[in-house]
Image (cartoon, rainbow, N blue to C red; front, side):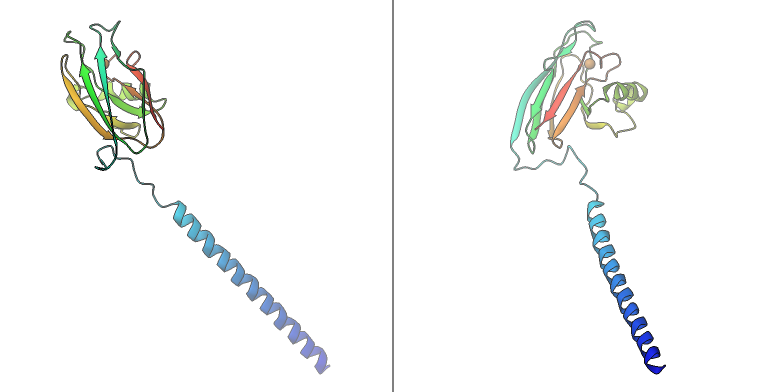
Length: 182
Ligand SMILES: [Cu+2]
């Protein structure tokens, strides 16, 4: 009888050790999972066009807003390609003479030119046509009057395809293009 009790106790003890062992394994797995998710949840550094790395190579280009009426107004480029990690310098000129030909240059997330243009309309001239919701905006210039020019300087956005657009009311459909960072 005594040997049966001893054997049973030993067996229970064995089970207990087993279960402890399993538990500690589970614990260590949880710990590594927690660490992994903690690392992946670390917020990505937000893109900030004004944060210029002074040692970054500079890509300079000329962009004109052309045309004296809404039928013919256009940007001089349909596609702008820049290299990742560069500082972009755009000599932006509004070459129009007609007073209604005011233009800006926004870089927006791909596929959002229409919604940004609508939000620009809502913001109006007092806000320089800059929408309140900036979630689709990467860069915004001020509004250029006919004959004005401005040097736009910003850090290249992360690698990807974006769009540029003039958001002065009625302009977005004909004044837009691709902005590619590669
Ligand atoms: Cu325009």
